[in-house]
Structure formats: structure tokens, C-alpha cells
Image 1 (tube, protein in one colour):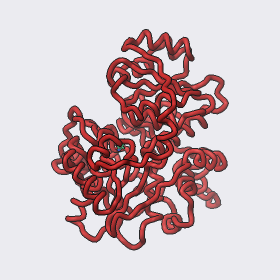
Image 2 (spheres, protein in one colour; image 1 turned 180 degrees about the vertical axis):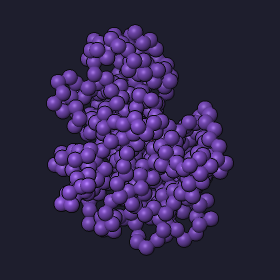
Image 3 (spheres, protein in one colour; image 1 turned 90 degrees about the vertical axis):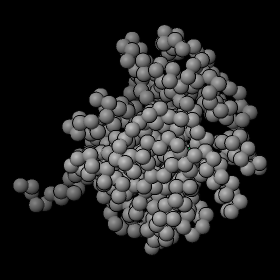
Image 4 (tube, helix red, strand yellow; image 1 turned 45 degrees about the vertical axis):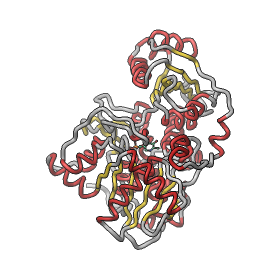
Length: 454
Ligand SMILES: *Cc1c(COP(=O)(O)O)cnc(C)c1O
């Protein structure tokens, strides 16, 4: 028996730090620090929070009283259960969330949540900046510096580079495939300098990824250098993506059922929305929007998950044939058997998929009708929202606009024949000098380079 004077809630709040389990084995447990620093559990599952706390109703009903940073603080404070002292947590969040997420109405039923106001102009800035802050926090007081290796096909590298730029005690090495990222993406990776180094690999993205994986397994390297990864399935990238679902609710008109439409590839963003709902945000329904890489919409229709190689599309950040966060979605909806899980999931998520031609038409239609410029990813979301609205009229749909259209300026110029306004973040780097080290696809060369430089 507990002593009646001990407040159980306070006890839980103050003393038990947040643990995470592996989706492969719920008794495989790690602390938040271990999960963030390791990225992946040893059994190759993904980390999930052991407890998803319900936020108090008076917080959820009064979001308008809180700034974006304060909303993030309330979420982390209850998720991390006092594991990070309030003062440090506030400081960390002030450094991570330095740009807004405005909600823009297209019409009465469709609003767009702009997630592209960060340094790399995509929603991945939220995850990358928060992860950088957490890693730096956990690495404080360590004598050895942390060297983070990232392989990128374009987008992630830019967000990670910006997130970790000038972070004390941490160095970042980015490997990207030569000639296979856009000029602007390359500039985002190669012009920061300071603690960010870029390796221009004369091979494919898969070659880059294989070299990084091999480095993590190499015992010589690991004896001399403290290596870590910043991959997209780190739980520290997922958690901050739940913040802006609350921030959207705060700005939305009250009294209507609210759905979120998420243009998806690896389904991290959608999974973060499921976390927000589990924490008590009254999200009515999720709309999963994909391009022709439609493994998840197909699963929602048929109950069969059939992963396959991805196909290249206009909305290329969503060209994913085996979405890594799908196991987290299964975990959240898991029931007594597979059929049960599928039923649970499709009650809360509807899937829709579209071709490039449909995407182009949507960009044109939205521009001529609303004078609003969607990027190809947001356009896929818009299409899914229209399809859903046709079935469920009267609900308010919030489409996540995941990137700024100027990131895809060549496509948008071609489709609309207009000049796209380039935001300051991109203008600033356009004329900066690229600095990258050329590297052939040879692990020994990569290893020697690391040993010489770190
Ligand atoms: C990464 C990315 C996506 C896909 O997000 P997931 O969380 O992987 O589903 C969508 N749009 C843009 C612009 C992206 O960069």
C-alpha cells in the first residue's frame, strides 16, 4: 500500500524518467537519452514512448493562451516527466523553435498549415533542430566531441546541417551523391562551414548510406571517434512534429470537426499527428496523401502491406516504397490480431494517391482559384483533401504544406510559367561558395579521411 499522503501523480511526474520500448520487443527498454543518442534499438525495431501522457483539458481547451514555444514546452514537460529540468527544456525549445507555423485559409473547408518557414524551407527543420538541441544537451559535459554521420538524397541533409550548425561539442559529416541533388540542395549542404563538412560522393545515395552504415560497425573508427547518426527515425525527430498539430488547432476556427491531411513518404509526420491525438488533441480524422508510391493507401484499402521499390515522381521527398514509420503506426493501432489492427487504423486514417499529372493540375488550379502557390507535396495533400471532402462534407481540413514552392522552383516555373518568389534563406546561400570534399565509393578512403579529420 502507498502512503495516502504520497501524491501518486507527482511521484510519477517527478521521479520516473520517460522510457521508450522497441516496436520489435516491448521489454527492450531505453531511456530518452539512450534512444536519442543511439537512434535505433539493437533489435532493429523503432523506439516508441512507453507512456503517452494525456495533456490536461484546460491546456487543450485554451491553446490560444500559449505561444508556440509554450505549447512545445507543455508537451515535452509531460512526455519527458521532469527528466530534463524546466529551465533547460525551455531554453532548448527556444533554440529549436525559431520560426512560426501559420495556418492559411484557402476557403472555408480547407486551410493550409505552412511548415516551411525554417532555414531549409521544409518541415524537417522542426525535427532536425529539436534533435540537434537534445543531442547537444545530452552530450554536455562529455569530453569527447560527437561526430554525426548523415547520408542524404537531398532534403534531410539540409535540415540536419542547419540544425546542428555551430552546435558546441558536435561535428557533422554529410555524404551526398554527386550530381544527384539539386543545385540549391547542394548549396544548403556545402556552404555552412564551421562544424559541418560535406563529402561529395561519386556514387548513388545507396552508396552513401552503405558507407555510413559500415562506419558505425567499424571497430577501429568507433574506438577513436564517438559516432552517432541523425537518421529520420530517431524519436527526437518525431516528437517535435507533434507540436504543430496543437499550434494548428490553436489557430483554427472553433466548433468544427478537424481533419489533418498529411502528404507522406516515410510517414513520420503522420505518426507525429497520431501522437498528438493520443495526447488528447481532438483530431477527428487523418488523411494520408501519397503520390504513386501508394503502399499505405493500398494497405488501408486492402489490409495487405506490400512494400516495393519506389518510383520517381514530382513530389520526390515522398518517393518511398517501404515507409519506415509504418511499424510505429501498426504499434499505435495494434489490436489482438492483424485484421483488428487494420480495422483500427482505417477508422482513423483514410488514404489517397495521385499521379504527377494530377499534381501538376492541382498546382495550376489552386493558383488560379486562390492565388496560392502549392509545392508538389502540398498539391498531393490538396488533392487528397478534395477527395475526402467529397465524401465527408462540412468538416474542416488542414493540409500540411511540407515545403516552400521555391524549393522546387524549376518544376513550379515550368508548370505555372511564373516567377516564384525566393525567400531570404535561399537567396542568402545562392551565391555562397560550395565547399565539399570529393570522395570515391571506397570505404577505406572514407575511413582514413575520418581518422585524419576527427
Ligand atoms: C520528407 C518530406 C515529406 C514526407 O514526410 P514523411 O514524414 O517522411 O512522411 C513530405 N514532403 C516534404 C517536402 C518532405 O521533405
